[in-house]
Amino acid sequence: MIVKPFKGIRPPKELVEAVSSRPYDVLSSDEARMEAAGNEKSLYHIIKPEIDFPAGTDEHDPAVYDKAVANFNTFKANHWLVQDEKEQYYIYAQTMNGKTQYGLVLCACVDDYLKGNIKKHELTRRDKEEDRMKHVRVNNANIEPVFFAYPDNEAINAIVAKYTARTPEYDFTAMPEKFRHTFWIVDDDTDIRRITACFAAIPSFYIADGHHRSAAAALVGAERARQNPHHRGDEEYNFFMAVCFPASQLTIIDYNRVVKDLNGLSDSAFLQALTKHFTVEQKGAEIFKPGRLHEFSLYLGGCWYALTAREGTYDDNDPIGVLDVTISSRYILDEILGIKDLRTDKRIDFVGGIRGLGELKRRVDSGEMKVALALYPVTMQQIIRIADSGNIMPPKTTWFEPKLRSGLVIHSFG
Image (cartoon, rainbow, N blue to C red; front, side):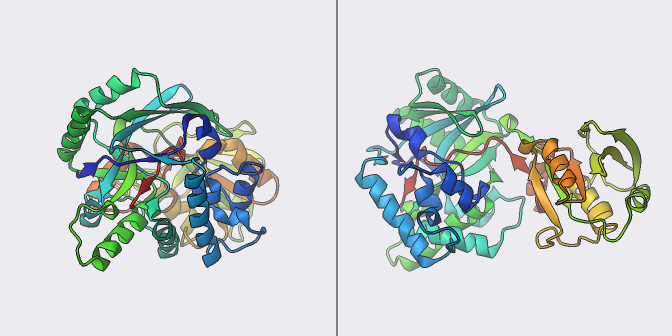
């Protein structure tokens, strides 16, 4: 893989907690407006600039993108964001529930994305790509990083261990998640060259989170190359910012479903229909969590049920057919509930496992939803197998946690 160091634009140590934010796509405009209330230094003013307009303002209005640029310039003018003088790599560690994962912040190559060396496991939507493309274009920068995995590499691990033994540049616990975020600077020229060489021997990156941001950054880079009659290939727009983690360190949690109705069936008729492809066991009122592959948890009418997929409903030799999201989509959501397209059907919603199964129960008990389905999480090995085979996962399959904190460092094309 082609990677390079870069001159990061970062907040001073004393401002990092005020500037940093959650990613733009994990909260609504109203939630961002609340989190940024009273904090003029919050990165939300750049990544969700609609918060500086009256509630209800279209986040895709040209004036909103212009406000992002104005705010970015204000942050730099006020020295809330300051550019490093030297091209360097950075190490970003996240700690959740006592487990720490260590990522290298670097610039990945647009050409590697376009050639398929940066591998996807999800489809992207053109409207979301275009939104992020506009954001990259107007700011002339990757304000937020994408989240990659790579095959474990001992030489890279040794360099990371050398720096993480030192006092970090940033070290704070972010709200509301209460996850710890730690950040070091790799500024030694020998180590910088070694990191670049180590990644040159790695055949692929795997997008863990940030498919739309990756696509947008790569498309803008290709666009800039076409527009530049003196294009060389080493300009900053040929690269985009990523945090790359060893695959073995990453945590994928469940990504669950809630559905508004039973497609005209009574509770008992729905449960009976499930027995065609699943064994169904009533578990009672206590929350029941799936404990293994091909086991599901269902909540209906105040009661939890264990569903176990029968033989023949999955294919262990098919990287897509073996997935629990495929089994549940085919034999529950489609065949019984009539939900054909998870991307567009308004009868279904999705709940990240970070919220816990109690959130599924709450949404059903409130009457907002009729039934909830919890899935056993996919593994990183399954994602790599699917990406390597050129397949695409069904929608809403993976939820990585913790999410990258935005605002620790920015990559500018300037």
